[in-house]
Amino acid sequence: MPNILHRLEINTGLAQKMMTGFIADQIAKAGMTRAVIGLSGGIDSALSAYLAAEALGGENVLAVRMPYRTSSQNSLTDAETVIEDLGLPSLTVPITDMAEPLFEQFNGMSNVRRGNIMARLRMTILYDQSAAFGGLVLGTSNKTEFLLGYSTIYGDSGVALQPIADLYKAQVRQVAAAVGVPEAVIHKAPSADLWEGQTDEGELGFSYDDVDQVLFLLVDERYTVDEVVDEGFSRAFVEDVWRRVKANHYKRTMPNIAKLSQRSIGHDFLYLRDWTGR
Amino acid sequence: MRLKVGLAQIYPKLGDVPANLKKHCDYIEQARKQGADLVIFPELSLTGYQVQDLVPELAIRASRDDATFRTLLDASQDIDIMFGFVSEDKRERFYTASAYLSGGECLHVHNKLYLPTYAMFDEGRYFDQGENARAFDTRFGRVGMLICEDFWHMSPPYLLWLDGADILLFHSASPSRGLDSGDRLAGTRWVELVNQAYGSMFTDYVIHCNRVGYEDGKSFWGGSSIVGPDGEFLAQGPYFEEALVIHEIDLNQLHRTRSRLPLLRDERPDMVLRELGRIQRRDSE
Image 1 (tube, rainbow over the protein chains, first blue to last red):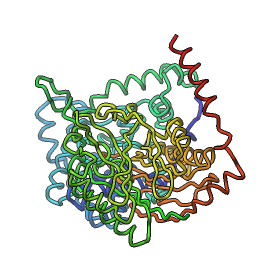
Image 2 (cartoon, one colour):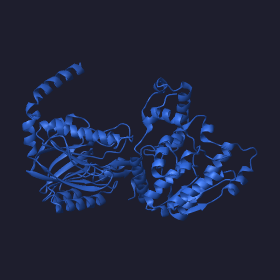
Image 3 (cartoon, rainbow over the protein chains, first blue to last red):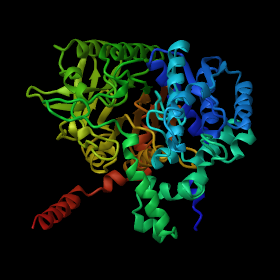
Image 4 (cartoon, one colour):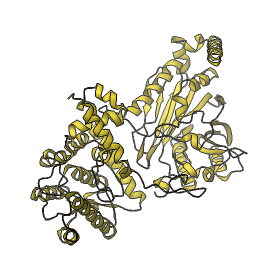
Protein backbone atom coordinates (compact mmCIF):
# COMPACT_ATOMS: atom_id res chain seq x y z
CA MET A 1 0.00 0.00 0.00
CA PRO A 2 1.36 3.48 -0.83
CA ASN A 3 2.17 5.97 1.89
CA ILE A 4 0.92 9.51 1.47
CA LEU A 5 0.62 10.28 5.19
CA HIS A 6 2.97 13.24 4.74
CA ARG A 7 0.18 14.95 2.81
CA LEU A 8 -1.90 14.91 6.01
CA GLU A 9 0.70 16.85 7.97
CA ILE A 10 -0.61 20.12 9.34
CA ASN A 11 0.66 23.23 11.05
CA THR A 12 -0.30 22.23 14.58
CA GLY A 13 0.09 25.72 16.04
CA LEU A 14 -2.36 27.12 13.52
CA ALA A 15 -4.77 24.24 14.13
CA GLN A 16 -4.56 24.89 17.87
CA LYS A 17 -5.24 28.60 17.40
CA MET A 18 -8.26 28.00 15.18
CA MET A 19 -9.78 25.33 17.42
CA THR A 20 -9.28 27.16 20.72
CA GLY A 21 -10.67 30.32 19.12
CA PHE A 22 -13.68 28.35 17.92
CA ILE A 23 -14.32 26.87 21.38
CA ALA A 24 -14.09 30.24 23.12
CA ASP A 25 -16.37 31.82 20.51
CA GLN A 26 -19.04 29.11 20.66
CA ILE A 27 -19.19 29.12 24.44
CA ALA A 28 -19.39 32.91 24.54
CA LYS A 29 -22.13 32.97 21.90
CA ALA A 30 -24.17 30.63 24.11
CA GLY A 31 -23.81 33.19 26.90
CA MET A 32 -21.62 30.83 28.91
CA THR A 33 -18.05 30.55 30.12
CA ARG A 34 -17.81 26.81 30.71
CA ALA A 35 -17.76 23.41 29.01
CA VAL A 36 -18.44 19.82 30.01
CA ILE A 37 -16.45 16.98 28.48
CA GLY A 38 -16.60 13.21 28.76
CA LEU A 39 -13.04 12.05 29.34
CA SER A 40 -12.43 8.44 28.29
CA GLY A 41 -8.68 8.33 28.65
CA GLY A 42 -8.28 8.20 24.88
CA ILE A 43 -6.50 10.64 22.60
CA ASP A 44 -9.58 12.38 21.13
CA SER A 45 -11.13 13.43 24.42
CA ALA A 46 -7.71 14.20 25.89
CA LEU A 47 -6.85 16.55 23.02
CA SER A 48 -10.30 18.15 23.29
CA ALA A 49 -9.72 18.72 27.01
CA TYR A 50 -6.35 20.38 26.41
CA LEU A 51 -7.89 22.67 23.78
CA ALA A 52 -10.88 23.51 25.98
CA ALA A 53 -8.65 24.24 28.98
CA GLU A 54 -6.53 26.58 26.87
CA ALA A 55 -9.62 28.30 25.45
CA LEU A 56 -11.63 28.64 28.66
CA GLY A 57 -9.23 28.10 31.55
CA GLY A 58 -8.98 24.68 33.21
CA GLU A 59 -11.30 25.66 36.04
CA ASN A 60 -14.10 26.12 33.49
CA VAL A 61 -13.89 22.64 31.98
CA LEU A 62 -15.68 19.88 33.85
CA ALA A 63 -14.17 16.48 33.05
CA VAL A 64 -16.57 13.59 33.55
CA ARG A 65 -15.37 9.98 33.68
CA MET A 66 -18.14 7.45 33.10
CA PRO A 67 -16.68 3.97 33.45
CA TYR A 68 -18.61 0.74 32.90
CA ARG A 69 -17.81 -2.43 34.83
CA THR A 70 -15.56 -3.71 32.04
CA SER A 71 -13.83 -0.41 31.28
CA SER A 72 -10.09 -0.74 31.42
CA GLN A 73 -8.27 0.54 34.48
CA ASN A 74 -5.72 2.13 32.15
CA SER A 75 -8.43 4.35 30.70
CA LEU A 76 -9.37 5.65 34.14
CA THR A 77 -5.74 6.25 35.05
CA ASP A 78 -4.97 8.00 31.77
CA ALA A 79 -8.00 10.25 32.22
CA GLU A 80 -6.80 11.02 35.75
CA THR A 81 -3.40 12.07 34.37
CA VAL A 82 -5.09 14.53 32.02
CA ILE A 83 -7.32 15.90 34.79
CA GLU A 84 -4.33 16.48 37.06
CA ASP A 85 -2.14 17.91 34.33
CA LEU A 86 -4.80 20.50 33.41
CA GLY A 87 -6.20 21.05 36.90
CA LEU A 88 -9.76 20.33 35.76
CA PRO A 89 -12.72 19.98 38.09
CA SER A 90 -13.87 16.39 37.63
CA LEU A 91 -16.55 13.85 38.40
CA THR A 92 -16.67 10.08 38.11
CA VAL A 93 -20.14 8.73 37.36
CA PRO A 94 -20.10 4.95 36.82
CA ILE A 95 -22.76 3.77 34.37
CA THR A 96 -22.88 0.08 35.32
CA ASP A 97 -25.86 0.43 37.64
CA MET A 98 -27.77 2.41 35.03
CA ALA A 99 -26.99 0.21 32.06
CA GLU A 100 -27.37 -3.28 33.45
CA PRO A 101 -31.07 -3.12 34.41
CA LEU A 102 -31.81 -2.31 30.76
CA PHE A 103 -29.46 -4.98 29.42
CA GLU A 104 -31.19 -7.54 31.65
CA GLN A 105 -34.61 -6.88 30.14
CA PHE A 106 -33.48 -8.42 26.85
CA ASN A 107 -31.81 -11.78 26.46
CA GLY A 108 -28.59 -11.96 24.52
CA MET A 109 -28.25 -8.29 23.81
CA SER A 110 -25.42 -7.83 21.28
CA ASN A 111 -22.27 -5.87 22.00
CA VAL A 112 -23.36 -3.22 19.49
CA ARG A 113 -26.69 -2.69 21.28
CA ARG A 114 -24.97 -2.56 24.66
CA GLY A 115 -22.33 -0.17 23.31
CA ASN A 116 -24.98 2.16 21.89
CA ILE A 117 -26.89 2.20 25.18
CA MET A 118 -23.69 3.00 27.06
CA ALA A 119 -22.86 5.83 24.67
CA ARG A 120 -26.36 7.28 25.08
CA LEU A 121 -26.24 7.01 28.86
CA ARG A 122 -22.98 8.94 28.80
CA MET A 123 -24.64 11.60 26.65
CA THR A 124 -27.49 11.80 29.18
CA ILE A 125 -25.05 12.31 32.04
CA LEU A 126 -23.09 14.95 30.14
CA TYR A 127 -26.23 16.92 29.27
CA ASP A 128 -27.34 16.73 32.89
CA GLN A 129 -23.96 18.06 33.96
CA SER A 130 -24.29 20.71 31.27
CA ALA A 131 -27.28 22.10 33.17
CA ALA A 132 -25.72 21.57 36.61
CA PHE A 133 -22.30 23.03 35.79
CA GLY A 134 -23.56 25.62 33.30
CA GLY A 135 -21.41 24.61 30.34
CA LEU A 136 -21.84 23.34 26.79
CA VAL A 137 -21.17 19.68 26.05
CA LEU A 138 -17.99 19.52 24.00
CA GLY A 139 -17.82 16.88 21.24
CA THR A 140 -14.71 14.78 20.84
CA SER A 141 -15.33 13.14 17.45
CA ASN A 142 -12.61 13.19 14.83
CA LYS A 143 -13.08 13.38 11.05
CA THR A 144 -12.15 9.74 10.44
CA GLU A 145 -14.78 8.26 12.73
CA PHE A 146 -17.36 10.88 11.74
CA LEU A 147 -16.94 10.03 8.05
CA LEU A 148 -16.97 6.28 8.69
CA GLY A 149 -19.98 6.57 10.97
CA TYR A 150 -18.01 4.86 13.70
CA SER A 151 -20.10 6.48 16.39
CA THR A 152 -23.46 6.20 18.13
CA ILE A 153 -26.10 8.57 16.87
CA TYR A 154 -27.39 10.67 19.81
CA GLY A 155 -24.64 9.06 21.88
CA ASP A 156 -21.13 10.37 21.40
CA SER A 157 -22.50 12.45 18.50
CA GLY A 158 -24.95 14.21 20.85
CA VAL A 159 -22.98 17.35 21.62
CA ALA A 160 -23.16 21.14 21.33
CA LEU A 161 -19.96 21.80 19.36
CA GLN A 162 -17.34 19.79 17.51
CA PRO A 163 -13.85 21.30 17.80
CA ILE A 164 -11.76 18.43 16.36
CA ALA A 165 -14.17 16.91 13.84
CA ASP A 166 -12.22 18.30 10.87
CA LEU A 167 -9.03 16.47 11.91
CA TYR A 168 -8.23 12.95 10.72
CA LYS A 169 -6.93 10.56 13.36
CA ALA A 170 -3.35 11.04 12.11
CA GLN A 171 -3.79 14.80 12.51
CA VAL A 172 -5.30 14.37 15.99
CA ARG A 173 -2.03 12.64 16.94
CA GLN A 174 0.03 15.52 15.53
CA VAL A 175 -1.86 18.20 17.44
CA ALA A 176 -2.03 16.06 20.60
CA ALA A 177 1.76 15.78 20.63
CA ALA A 178 2.11 19.53 20.08
CA VAL A 179 -0.20 20.54 22.94
CA GLY A 180 1.34 18.15 25.46
CA VAL A 181 -1.14 15.26 25.70
CA PRO A 182 0.69 12.52 27.68
CA GLU A 183 2.72 10.11 25.53
CA ALA A 184 0.92 7.07 26.95
CA VAL A 185 -2.41 8.45 25.73
CA ILE A 186 -1.08 9.27 22.27
CA HIS A 187 0.52 5.90 21.65
CA LYS A 188 -1.98 3.37 22.99
CA ALA A 189 -4.30 1.51 20.62
CA PRO A 190 -7.49 3.53 20.06
CA SER A 191 -10.52 1.86 21.63
CA ALA A 192 -14.15 2.74 22.25
CA ASP A 193 -13.67 0.56 25.38
CA LEU A 194 -17.26 -0.64 25.17
CA TRP A 195 -16.28 -4.25 25.90
CA GLU A 196 -13.15 -5.96 27.09
CA GLY A 197 -10.35 -6.15 24.56
CA GLN A 198 -12.16 -4.01 21.99
CA THR A 199 -9.96 -1.91 19.69
CA ASP A 200 -11.19 0.44 16.97
CA GLU A 201 -8.85 -0.98 14.37
CA GLY A 202 -9.80 -4.57 15.25
CA GLU A 203 -13.48 -3.76 14.92
CA LEU A 204 -13.17 -1.66 11.78
CA GLY A 205 -10.89 -4.19 10.09
CA PHE A 206 -8.27 -1.70 8.95
CA SER A 207 -5.78 0.72 10.45
CA TYR A 208 -6.43 4.42 10.98
CA ASP A 209 -3.33 5.28 8.97
CA ASP A 210 -4.64 3.36 5.95
CA VAL A 211 -8.17 4.70 6.09
CA ASP A 212 -7.02 8.27 6.79
CA GLN A 213 -5.10 8.33 3.53
CA VAL A 214 -8.01 7.01 1.50
CA LEU A 215 -10.48 9.41 3.14
CA PHE A 216 -8.11 12.33 2.62
CA LEU A 217 -7.98 11.62 -1.11
CA LEU A 218 -11.72 10.95 -1.48
CA VAL A 219 -12.99 13.82 0.66
CA ASP A 220 -10.41 16.59 0.96
CA GLU A 221 -8.79 16.12 -2.44
CA ARG A 222 -11.99 15.11 -4.29
CA TYR A 223 -10.45 12.02 -5.93
CA THR A 224 -12.84 9.52 -7.49
CA VAL A 225 -12.71 5.93 -6.25
CA ASP A 226 -10.91 4.99 -9.50
CA GLU A 227 -8.33 7.73 -8.98
CA VAL A 228 -7.61 6.53 -5.44
CA VAL A 229 -7.17 3.00 -6.78
CA ASP A 230 -4.77 4.41 -9.40
CA GLU A 231 -2.71 5.79 -6.50
CA GLY A 232 -2.09 2.20 -5.45
CA PHE A 233 -4.77 1.52 -2.82
CA SER A 234 -6.71 -1.74 -3.15
CA ARG A 235 -10.06 -1.41 -4.89
CA ALA A 236 -11.89 -3.53 -2.34
CA PHE A 237 -10.63 -1.33 0.49
CA VAL A 238 -11.40 1.98 -1.21
CA GLU A 239 -14.88 0.83 -2.22
CA ASP A 240 -15.61 -0.40 1.29
CA VAL A 241 -14.51 2.90 2.79
CA TRP A 242 -16.62 4.96 0.38
CA ARG A 243 -19.61 2.66 0.99
CA ARG A 244 -19.28 3.28 4.73
CA VAL A 245 -19.07 7.04 4.23
CA LYS A 246 -22.25 7.06 2.16
CA ALA A 247 -24.16 4.60 4.35
CA ASN A 248 -23.52 6.68 7.47
CA HIS A 249 -24.31 10.09 6.08
CA TYR A 250 -27.53 10.10 8.12
CA LYS A 251 -25.40 10.35 11.25
CA ARG A 252 -23.89 13.61 10.03
CA THR A 253 -27.07 15.40 9.02
CA MET A 254 -30.26 16.50 10.70
CA PRO A 255 -33.29 14.21 10.15
CA ASN A 256 -35.23 15.06 7.00
CA ILE A 257 -38.41 17.05 7.48
CA ALA A 258 -41.40 16.33 5.23
CA LYS A 259 -41.96 19.59 3.41
CA LEU A 260 -45.58 20.69 3.32
CA SER A 261 -45.78 24.46 3.70
CA GLN A 262 -44.40 27.41 1.76
CA ARG A 263 -41.54 27.73 4.19
CA SER A 264 -40.17 24.79 6.11
CA ILE A 265 -37.48 24.18 8.67
CA GLY A 266 -34.54 22.46 7.05
CA HIS A 267 -35.54 23.50 3.53
CA ASP A 268 -36.03 27.23 3.09
CA PHE A 269 -35.91 28.67 6.60
CA LEU A 270 -32.25 29.48 6.37
CA TYR A 271 -30.36 31.01 9.25
CA LEU A 272 -27.02 30.12 10.75
CA ARG A 273 -26.87 28.26 14.05
CA ASP A 274 -24.97 31.38 15.16
CA TRP A 275 -28.05 33.48 14.34
CA THR A 276 -28.03 34.97 17.82
CA GLY A 277 -25.38 35.42 20.43
CA ARG A 278 -22.29 37.48 21.09
CA MET B 1 1.20 63.26 -1.12
CA ARG B 2 0.86 60.98 1.84
CA LEU B 3 -2.18 58.99 2.87
CA LYS B 4 -2.58 57.51 6.31
CA VAL B 5 -4.75 54.41 6.06
CA GLY B 6 -6.58 52.60 8.87
CA LEU B 7 -7.53 48.97 8.30
CA ALA B 8 -10.29 48.08 10.74
CA GLN B 9 -10.31 44.27 10.64
CA ILE B 10 -13.30 43.83 12.90
CA TYR B 11 -15.51 40.90 13.96
CA PRO B 12 -19.00 42.01 12.93
CA LYS B 13 -21.88 40.58 14.91
CA LEU B 14 -24.10 38.52 12.64
CA GLY B 15 -27.36 40.27 11.87
CA ASP B 16 -26.97 43.09 14.39
CA VAL B 17 -26.67 46.36 12.49
CA PRO B 18 -26.98 48.66 15.55
CA ALA B 19 -24.14 46.84 17.37
CA ASN B 20 -22.00 46.89 14.25
CA LEU B 21 -22.73 50.55 13.59
CA LYS B 22 -21.54 51.36 17.08
CA LYS B 23 -18.37 49.35 16.47
CA HIS B 24 -17.82 51.26 13.22
CA CYS B 25 -18.16 54.58 15.03
CA ASP B 26 -15.70 53.43 17.73
CA TYR B 27 -13.09 52.37 15.16
CA ILE B 28 -13.62 55.53 13.10
CA GLU B 29 -12.98 57.56 16.23
CA GLN B 30 -9.84 55.57 17.08
CA ALA B 31 -8.56 55.95 13.52
CA ARG B 32 -9.26 59.67 13.60
CA LYS B 33 -7.37 60.05 16.86
CA GLN B 34 -4.40 58.31 15.27
CA GLY B 35 -4.47 60.74 12.37
CA ALA B 36 -5.84 58.41 9.71
CA ASP B 37 -7.21 59.98 6.51
CA LEU B 38 -9.12 56.88 5.44
CA VAL B 39 -10.50 53.94 7.39
CA ILE B 40 -11.57 50.71 5.67
CA PHE B 41 -13.90 48.07 7.08
CA PRO B 42 -14.38 44.50 5.76
CA GLU B 43 -17.00 43.10 3.39
CA LEU B 44 -20.52 43.23 4.88
CA SER B 45 -19.05 44.91 7.94
CA LEU B 46 -22.47 46.25 9.01
CA THR B 47 -24.21 42.86 8.94
CA GLY B 48 -21.84 39.89 9.15
CA TYR B 49 -21.21 37.58 6.23
CA GLN B 50 -23.57 34.59 6.06
CA VAL B 51 -26.75 36.60 6.36
CA GLN B 52 -28.95 34.15 4.41
CA ASP B 53 -32.65 34.80 5.07
CA LEU B 54 -31.78 37.90 7.13
CA VAL B 55 -31.02 39.78 3.89
CA PRO B 56 -34.33 41.68 3.56
CA GLU B 57 -34.38 42.82 7.17
CA LEU B 58 -30.74 43.95 7.17
CA ALA B 59 -30.78 45.76 3.84
CA ILE B 60 -30.44 49.54 3.75
CA ARG B 61 -30.49 52.13 0.99
CA ALA B 62 -27.38 54.18 0.34
CA SER B 63 -29.07 57.45 1.13
CA ARG B 64 -29.14 60.19 3.76
CA ASP B 65 -32.75 59.14 4.38
CA ASP B 66 -31.50 55.95 6.02
CA ALA B 67 -30.53 56.55 9.67
CA THR B 68 -27.65 54.05 9.64
CA PHE B 69 -26.21 55.40 6.42
CA ARG B 70 -26.67 58.96 7.68
CA THR B 71 -24.71 58.21 10.86
CA LEU B 72 -21.75 57.05 8.79
CA LEU B 73 -22.07 59.97 6.37
CA ASP B 74 -21.90 62.34 9.34
CA ALA B 75 -18.87 60.44 10.69
CA SER B 76 -17.04 61.03 7.39
CA GLN B 77 -16.68 64.81 7.80
CA ASP B 78 -12.94 64.70 8.41
CA ILE B 79 -12.04 61.08 7.71
CA ASP B 80 -12.92 59.02 4.63
CA ILE B 81 -14.74 55.73 5.26
CA MET B 82 -15.18 52.57 3.23
CA PHE B 83 -17.56 49.97 4.65
CA GLY B 84 -19.70 47.01 3.60
CA PHE B 85 -23.45 46.57 3.77
CA VAL B 86 -26.49 44.86 2.25
CA SER B 87 -27.90 47.29 -0.28
CA GLU B 88 -31.46 47.24 -1.50
CA ASP B 89 -32.59 48.94 -4.69
CA LYS B 90 -36.08 50.29 -5.32
CA ARG B 91 -37.28 47.01 -6.79
CA GLU B 92 -36.40 44.47 -4.06
CA ARG B 93 -33.04 43.52 -5.46
CA PHE B 94 -30.29 43.04 -2.93
CA TYR B 95 -26.57 43.51 -3.35
CA THR B 96 -23.42 42.95 -1.36
CA ALA B 97 -22.23 46.54 -1.49
CA SER B 98 -19.36 48.83 -0.53
CA ALA B 99 -19.71 52.55 0.04
CA TYR B 100 -17.00 55.20 0.02
CA LEU B 101 -17.89 58.25 2.14
CA SER B 102 -15.96 61.51 2.32
CA GLY B 103 -16.77 64.97 3.67
CA GLY B 104 -20.30 63.90 4.55
CA GLU B 105 -21.02 62.71 1.01
CA CYS B 106 -21.20 59.28 -0.60
CA LEU B 107 -18.71 59.33 -3.47
CA HIS B 108 -19.35 55.83 -4.77
CA VAL B 109 -21.23 52.59 -4.15
CA HIS B 110 -19.90 49.36 -5.62
CA ASN B 111 -22.11 46.28 -5.93
CA LYS B 112 -20.28 42.95 -5.80
CA LEU B 113 -19.79 41.62 -9.33
CA TYR B 114 -18.92 38.00 -8.67
CA LEU B 115 -21.04 36.07 -6.17
CA PRO B 116 -19.34 32.82 -5.19
CA THR B 117 -21.93 30.04 -5.24
CA TYR B 118 -19.91 26.88 -4.94
CA ALA B 119 -18.40 24.71 -2.21
CA MET B 120 -19.14 26.50 1.10
CA PHE B 121 -20.39 29.66 -0.63
CA ASP B 122 -24.03 30.42 -1.42
CA GLU B 123 -24.11 34.12 -2.28
CA GLY B 124 -25.94 33.80 -5.59
CA ARG B 125 -28.93 32.45 -3.71
CA TYR B 126 -29.43 35.70 -1.81
CA PHE B 127 -27.89 38.51 -3.84
CA ASP B 128 -28.06 40.02 -7.29
CA GLN B 129 -24.86 40.66 -9.24
CA GLY B 130 -23.49 44.15 -9.66
CA GLU B 131 -22.91 45.34 -13.21
CA ASN B 132 -20.21 48.01 -12.97
CA ALA B 133 -16.49 48.15 -12.31
CA ARG B 134 -15.80 51.89 -12.05
CA ALA B 135 -13.02 53.96 -10.57
CA PHE B 136 -13.86 57.28 -8.90
CA ASP B 137 -12.07 60.40 -7.72
CA THR B 138 -11.24 61.13 -4.09
CA ARG B 139 -9.15 63.76 -2.35
CA PHE B 140 -6.26 61.26 -2.57
CA GLY B 141 -6.60 60.60 -6.28
CA ARG B 142 -8.54 58.05 -8.22
CA VAL B 143 -9.40 54.79 -6.53
CA GLY B 144 -11.48 51.66 -7.13
CA MET B 145 -13.31 49.33 -4.74
CA LEU B 146 -13.79 45.56 -5.08
CA ILE B 147 -15.27 42.90 -2.83
CA CYS B 148 -13.64 39.52 -2.19
CA GLU B 149 -14.49 37.25 -5.15
CA ASP B 150 -14.35 40.32 -7.41
CA PHE B 151 -10.58 40.28 -7.11
CA TRP B 152 -10.26 36.52 -7.42
CA HIS B 153 -11.12 37.30 -11.03
CA MET B 154 -8.45 39.36 -12.75
CA SER B 155 -10.73 41.42 -14.97
CA PRO B 156 -12.26 43.79 -12.35
CA PRO B 157 -8.89 44.99 -10.99
CA TYR B 158 -7.67 45.34 -14.57
CA LEU B 159 -10.70 47.44 -15.53
CA LEU B 160 -10.30 49.69 -12.48
CA TRP B 161 -6.63 50.13 -13.30
CA LEU B 162 -7.45 51.23 -16.84
CA ASP B 163 -10.22 53.45 -15.48
CA GLY B 164 -7.56 55.36 -13.62
CA ALA B 165 -7.41 53.79 -10.17
CA ASP B 166 -3.99 54.20 -8.59
CA ILE B 167 -5.26 52.73 -5.34
CA LEU B 168 -7.23 49.49 -5.30
CA LEU B 169 -9.38 49.17 -2.19
CA PHE B 170 -10.26 45.51 -1.58
CA HIS B 171 -12.29 44.17 1.26
CA SER B 172 -13.43 40.68 2.10
CA ALA B 173 -14.95 38.17 4.49
CA SER B 174 -12.58 35.36 3.61
CA PRO B 175 -13.26 32.11 5.48
CA SER B 176 -10.17 30.24 6.67
CA ARG B 177 -9.45 27.05 4.78
CA GLY B 178 -6.68 24.83 3.56
CA LEU B 179 -4.81 23.91 6.74
CA ASP B 180 -1.67 22.05 5.67
CA SER B 181 1.92 22.05 6.86
CA GLY B 182 2.53 25.60 5.58
CA ASP B 183 3.13 28.54 7.91
CA ARG B 184 -0.19 30.05 6.76
CA LEU B 185 -3.44 28.59 5.45
CA ALA B 186 -3.55 27.75 1.75
CA GLY B 187 -6.41 30.25 1.38
CA THR B 188 -4.33 32.99 3.01
CA ARG B 189 -1.31 32.26 0.82
CA TRP B 190 -3.51 32.48 -2.27
CA VAL B 191 -4.98 35.89 -1.37
CA GLU B 192 -1.58 37.30 -0.44
CA LEU B 193 -0.17 36.02 -3.72
CA VAL B 194 -2.85 37.67 -5.86
CA ASN B 195 -2.69 40.95 -3.92
CA GLN B 196 1.06 41.05 -4.41
CA ALA B 197 0.58 40.22 -8.09
CA TYR B 198 -1.85 43.12 -8.60
CA GLY B 199 0.51 45.55 -6.90
CA SER B 200 3.34 44.32 -9.11
CA MET B 201 1.51 44.08 -12.43
CA PHE B 202 -0.43 47.34 -12.06
CA THR B 203 2.22 49.32 -10.16
CA ASP B 204 -0.69 50.35 -7.91
CA TYR B 205 -1.31 50.41 -4.20
CA VAL B 206 -3.42 47.42 -3.16
CA ILE B 207 -5.13 47.94 0.19
CA HIS B 208 -7.03 44.95 1.58
CA CYS B 209 -9.16 44.68 4.70
CA ASN B 210 -10.32 41.19 5.73
CA ARG B 211 -12.56 40.41 8.69
CA VAL B 212 -11.94 38.16 11.67
CA GLY B 213 -14.21 36.15 13.97
CA TYR B 214 -16.39 33.08 13.56
CA GLU B 215 -19.69 32.15 11.92
CA ASP B 216 -20.97 28.59 12.41
CA GLY B 217 -17.53 27.04 12.64
CA LYS B 218 -16.01 29.04 9.81
CA SER B 219 -13.30 31.39 10.98
CA PHE B 220 -12.07 34.49 9.16
CA TRP B 221 -8.34 35.06 9.08
CA GLY B 222 -7.84 38.84 9.05
CA GLY B 223 -4.31 39.62 7.93
CA SER B 224 -5.33 42.91 6.29
CA SER B 225 -2.53 44.35 4.23
CA ILE B 226 -1.11 47.06 2.03
CA VAL B 227 0.96 46.16 -1.03
CA GLY B 228 2.92 48.97 -2.66
CA PRO B 229 3.47 49.66 -6.37
CA ASP B 230 6.77 47.77 -6.15
CA GLY B 231 4.83 44.65 -5.21
CA GLU B 232 6.05 44.41 -1.64
CA PHE B 233 3.96 44.16 1.52
CA LEU B 234 4.22 47.47 3.39
CA ALA B 235 1.88 46.63 6.27
CA GLN B 236 0.13 43.52 7.52
CA GLY B 237 -2.40 43.07 10.27
CA PRO B 238 -2.43 40.12 12.66
CA TYR B 239 -4.10 36.86 11.68
CA PHE B 240 -7.39 36.03 13.42
CA GLU B 241 -7.38 38.98 15.88
CA GLU B 242 -9.42 42.16 15.75
CA ALA B 243 -7.12 45.10 15.06
CA LEU B 244 -6.86 48.60 13.72
CA VAL B 245 -3.77 48.68 11.52
CA ILE B 246 -2.55 52.20 10.78
CA HIS B 247 -0.01 52.76 8.03
CA GLU B 248 1.01 55.82 6.04
CA ILE B 249 1.69 55.40 2.33
CA ASP B 250 3.57 57.76 0.03
CA LEU B 251 1.55 58.29 -3.14
CA ASN B 252 4.57 59.84 -4.87
CA GLN B 253 5.97 56.32 -5.05
CA LEU B 254 3.51 55.69 -7.87
CA HIS B 255 5.35 57.96 -10.30
CA ARG B 256 8.76 56.80 -9.16
CA THR B 257 7.87 53.14 -9.72
CA ARG B 258 6.18 53.87 -13.04
CA SER B 259 9.24 55.79 -14.27
CA ARG B 260 11.23 52.64 -13.72
CA LEU B 261 8.53 50.24 -14.87
CA PRO B 262 6.07 51.82 -17.37
CA LEU B 263 3.60 48.93 -17.48
CA LEU B 264 0.65 51.29 -17.40
CA ARG B 265 2.06 53.49 -20.20
CA ASP B 266 2.63 50.45 -22.39
CA GLU B 267 -0.67 48.71 -21.71
CA ARG B 268 -2.71 48.21 -24.92
CA PRO B 269 -6.44 48.23 -24.15
CA ASP B 270 -7.29 48.57 -27.87
CA MET B 271 -5.54 45.30 -28.60
CA VAL B 272 -7.26 43.66 -25.60
CA LEU B 273 -10.66 44.88 -26.76
CA ARG B 274 -10.05 43.79 -30.36
CA GLU B 275 -8.95 40.33 -29.29
CA LEU B 276 -11.77 40.00 -26.78
CA GLY B 277 -14.20 40.91 -29.56
CA ARG B 278 -12.71 38.25 -31.79
CA ILE B 279 -12.85 35.63 -29.00
CA GLN B 280 -16.41 36.52 -28.14
CA ARG B 281 -17.54 36.34 -31.77
CA ARG B 282 -15.85 32.96 -32.16
CA ASP B 283 -17.40 31.60 -28.97
CA SER B 284 -20.88 32.77 -29.92
CA GLU B 285 -20.77 31.01 -33.28
